[in-house]
Amino acid sequence: MFEFLNSPIRQDAGPLTDVAAADHFWRLLPRNDPFESQLTVSEVLADFAGKKEHTRDQIRALMALDQRARKLGEALLINYATANTQSHSLEKRSWQSAFELAQSFGRAYAQIMQDLRGDTPPRGCEKYLPIVSLRLFQHRQVEFLLRPFVTERTVADGWADLHAAYQNAESAGLLAQAVAPRRWHEEQSDESTLEREYINLLLVELINDGQFSPHDVFWLNRRIPRWCAGLSLQSGQSDVPAGRTNERFVVDVGSAQGLMRLTRSAAGELRYLDPAPLLALVEQEITALRDRERPAEGPAPFGRGRQLKVLRKFHTSCLPKPAQINRRGERKPVASTVTAVVGLSHIMRMLRNEEHRKAVAAPPPVPEVEEITITVFGGFTESSPAGMRKNGGRGAAGADDDFGVPHQVWQLKDRSDSGCGLRGQIRESNRVLPGVLVAFRERDDMPWTLAVVRRLQKRIGDRVDIGVEYVGQN
Image (cartoon, rainbow, N blue to C red; front, top):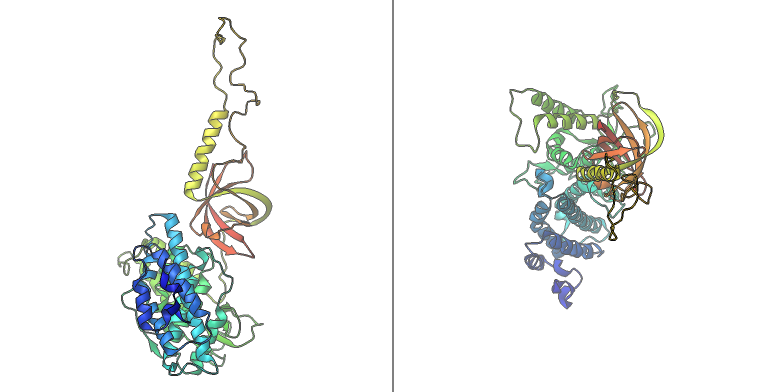
């Protein structure tokens, strides 16, 4: 489609040879098809990241393309940011495309970081270290934000590159240097630092573990930068007040993992994070929202009650010691299987199909007079019991488990008076997100239970653990 991608003048960097080539490449992209534009940009970035060495002009070309592609990323995330879902399938496709775009830029910047840390860094490129680190952190923020809600095609988390970028900035004395981040869907952002953007990234990955719906976590993500203003990472425990050594999180910058709760066995190149300033700011917002006389701060895609619920859950997720949850009922282990239908539209269609099958299978009322059948010869045949058919009265309905919609067979692990825990295999776990409705039953002769997904935890392969809260039965 784009002939210049395979032209002889492509050379090693293709459209990213220099800024002029990057601008020319950008002008040739289709303005009316953001998905095709994203695929083409990602292809070019994959070629760019596959090279081991880059010149100063190529690095500048990458940053120029990144600046141009900001509008493309915003177009792909418009439904995510505004919670204005006109088409569920289109929305999912947009999130997948935005995820792949951020992932492609992240890989390109990670490769540039490796070049800058190498034995022979590109000449005259040291000044680009802060902006390259910033853009790497911010693209990975978007990637981590979207990862639970898209069909991910990679397993690697990329924490090794992120930790290396943090350590590189730390050794160069750049962590406290002021930077001006460009956040999607914001005309201007507050001044930040590389350390705060790195902490922002750690928090996004910490909380986005399947307990929030996509729009909830996106709303939180826009507030996290402000809450990070008073946070910093410490390399030792000498500056921690007595009695508070365990009230922090820890990250091992020599590992491939993100932020974790501090344990006695923690070892490695540790950096400690005290979330107390963040928790205090969140508590202030909760107090303000409880005051009905005080208007909510700024526009929000949902009301005051939902904001309070999301903030409370976020506050709990950021506690160094997990809060004890007072459940409404005792959770009892169960070993059973259920048939489940996911999504309101599928549930409604399944119920309509089931009512139709019952109506077809039900015998019609027996007439008060004996029926006769007039034949072409003027005689009659013996009457048979009304409604009896050659298949024993089952009618034309299919098998009892043929709902006419996609359905799953899951394991029921435990239950309480308010909800239950399920485990199953799902090819596309992004279809079972927090907030989605699920109908399930253990046997065909039992009523359906309607529930809402509250948490989702991905396990090995395509297995997931799902926590649901009951809405109603039958």
